[in-house]
Amino acid sequence: MPTPALQTPAPPDAASTDPNSPDDTAQPQDSSAEVTADTDGCAANERSWRRITPPRLALVIGLAMAVALAALIGVLGVRAYHAHQSAELRALYLQVGRQGAVNLTTIDWHHADADVQRILSTATGPFYDDFSQRSQPFIDVVKKVQSSSTGSVTVAGLESSTDTEAQVLVAVSVQTTTSEAPQQTPRAWRMRLSVQKVGNDVKVSNVEFVP
Image 1 (cartoon, rainbow, N blue to C red):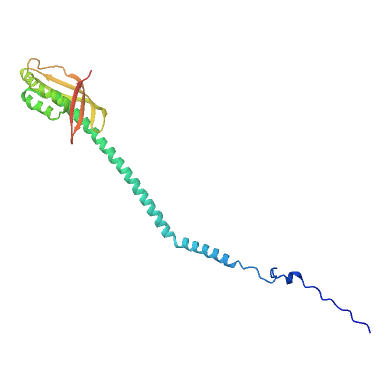
Image 2: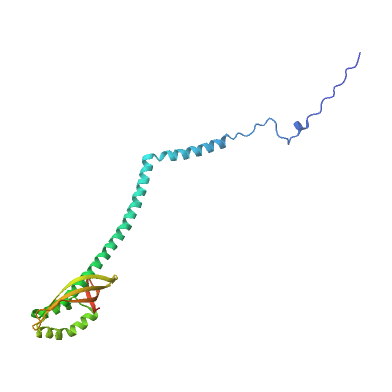
């Protein structure tokens, strides 16, 4: 009777017996948690944008535009106010210069004292000092020759101006009569009048006759 052959058991697989080898049966980690977190973040951002409805967005834009428009209107308003103030001041300078020239050339011997006082009331600075000292001799001469003169402005303009003073050029036609020459040809005079602010008024501070 033949002897049955002995079967040598196969050596165990080294990989299966190594305790440090990774378990082939272990399942890979599921990345669904990370995906869920990213999805939740995107969803939160989308919900935040959805909360800004078109009417609310239009309101925000409208308010921003209103604030910008109000600031622009304020700046333009201030500029317009200063421009208006400057124009009014230049017009006042010109008016005072014209009137000063008329006052200087319109004097009647019947009321010379009042005419001279009118000149002094609108004068200041060097012109006031000089004319006030010469006023009485001037009145005496006007009364002696019985002079009457009337001046009228033919043209006037600002030569220069600042916030406190200006130079006014005035051309005047002067008609004069005296007891000895009742009929005289009108004479043309040109004057440069310096005017300056004195408090809330503007007065003549100097007068020059120019060719």
